[in-house]
Image 1 (cartoon, rainbow, N blue to C red):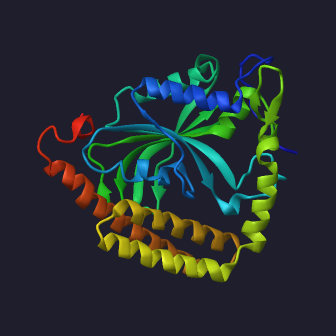
Image 2: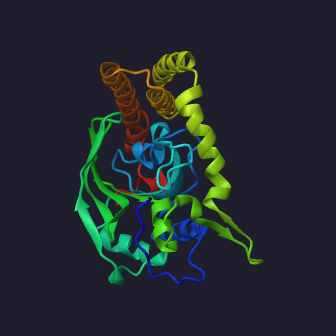
Length: 318
C-alpha cells in the first residue's frame, strides 16, 4: 500500500491545480526580479543541468532566473505502477546570483504563494550538501521537508565545472509533483488535478502522463538500442570537443547533455558495469569541465573585457 501523503490546509473544494502551482511560482519569482525562462529543449536529468543554471552560475555577473524543467531519469521508471516514482517529472528551478541574505524568507513566501500556510506546518531545513559528479559541481545546502515529506532542495553553489563560484549563487529546486500532491492532499501522482476548466472539466496527471510512463519505462528498460547508444555517446563526445575547438561552449554543452542521457539509458538497460560506470562519469565530467572553462574564457572573459556599460544591466556586478 502507498504511504499516505501529508495533508495540507488548502481548501478542500478547489485546491490549486498543478498548473496553478506552476503559474503562482512563476508570478512570485517574477516579482522578485527573476527572468522567467521556458523549459530547456534538451534531455536533462535535473533542472540544475540546464545551461541557465550550470553555466550562468559561473562568473561575476548578476543573474536571476526561474523556470520549469522536465527531467528524465530512465532508471526511476516503474511502468506507471508506482504512485510516487516517475522516469519523467517536473522541477521548478530558481537560481539567484549573488544569493540574497533573506533567501530563506523568500522561499517560505513562495510556499505561501501556492497555498501552504507555513505557520501551520512543520517546515524543516535538513542539512544535505549537494554534489554532481558528472558536472564537477558541489554546494552546501539543505533538503526542505514539510510535515516529514521532502519537497525542495536548497543549495549554495560552491563550485561548478571545477571553478569556484564567486559570488555564490543560491539554487532552489522544487519537486512540483510532490508539492502539488501535498497541496491537493492526494496519495498518487496520477491523481493530481492538472487543470480545472471554468466548465468544471478537469484533467489529471494520469490523463496527461500515465501512458508516457508506461511506454517510456518499457523503452528505457527493454527496447532502447544499446549499440546505438554506445555509438551516440562516442559521437557526441567527439562533437563536443570539436565544437569547443571553435570556441562555442553553449552548443558544446548540448552535446554534454546528450552524452548524459545516452549514459542514463545505457544504465537503465543494465549494460554498464560498475567499473565502466565510473569511466563514463569521468568522461562526461571532463567534457562538462571543458565547457565551463570555455564559457569562462569566451563568455565571461568577453564581458569582463568589454568597455564599461557595453553589456548593459546583465553585466551589473550586483
